[in-house]
Length: 104
Image 1 (cartoon, rainbow, N blue to C red):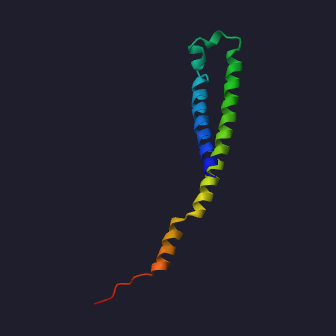
Image 2 (cartoon, rainbow, N blue to C red):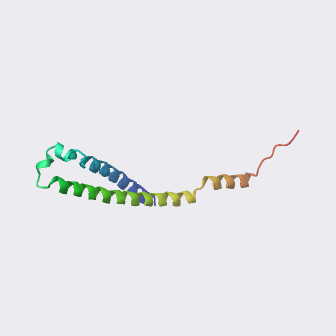
Image 3 (cartoon, rainbow, N blue to C red):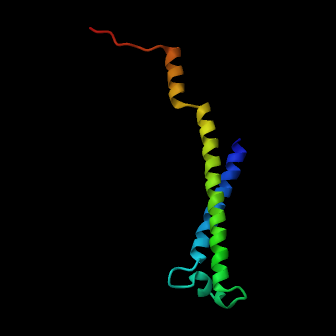
């Protein structure tokens, strides 16, 4: 279970970085985005097609990111059920017993 969690966490970080890069590449309201700023405007793919491709890819990565977040949350919840801090404290008190101070 630990290796699955580590794998999903690495995938989570990679997807987060990819989303940031894709959002930066997308055209803003007044310009063409970073793609055309660095000479990508004259390629065989039109700006409109590139924008559609970037927005669809960003949407797909966002859905994968959310699903991955849910899976990581379920794994963390399952691990926390095994080692509850409150139950550990209560079990420790049951073994020792509760010490009550005596009145003088």
